[in-house]
Length: 288
Image 1 (cartoon, one colour):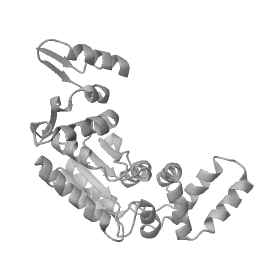
Image 2 (image 1 turned 180 degrees about the vertical axis):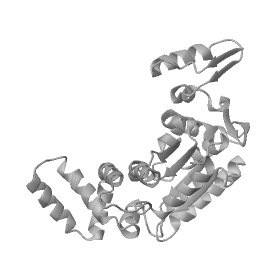
Image 3 (image 1 turned 60 degrees about the vertical axis):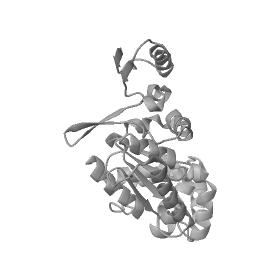
Image 4 (image 1 turned 90 degrees about the vertical axis):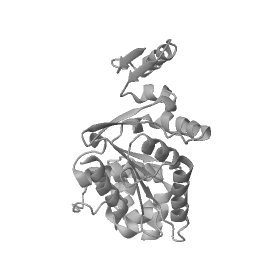
């Protein structure tokens, strides 16, 4: 038997991959402890064990045995290749898109005065409603998962997501109890852009972020003033259209505006209710 404690120390990612090949070709049993997402991503996920201290004892978790080969392939392909850090998270917040991926960490910092990653919290976009691989892996391995979902006016998204969760329970045998899983929805009829405009009324912050996006860092005061006047003249519906047309580009600027908080909004006024619920639940899980 070979036991290797954090063999990734002082090795760059490609060297870690080479090391893994050498270890995996060794004769007999090999036990590796690691904090490297690169190393973890190369391992067959069925062989991963997570050790988590809970109420003075250490729990050993592994992928639930009820997962079929297709589930395992999806997790290996969609989670481990690009999001291996989830294995080392204290908790994970999942949401639909790139807008949330950029602004939710800023909201967390506004709310708590510290970054999410400094507390071991990962904020991850699933690019739609592809929650299942993350929930299956995280909850199997003892990493609590919180989902914040859009909520269209017809209720189709909420119904579909809730059915999705029930299917996960039935397919895997995971109970998804309150100690490892929870979910909340934005206000009825809202995606994240509508939530920011219609529910939080962050019009000033959104205008500033759109001006920053469209002026591309210019120092020309006349151009800045003209662009500000142009965007300020838009009604809320037109602002929504502009936001949705440039999700990936305006959201980074909005994250910076939220961090600066130029309107001096009080704690929580920059955070949708569904995300406040997520933050409060995570407080329970990881004792922030």
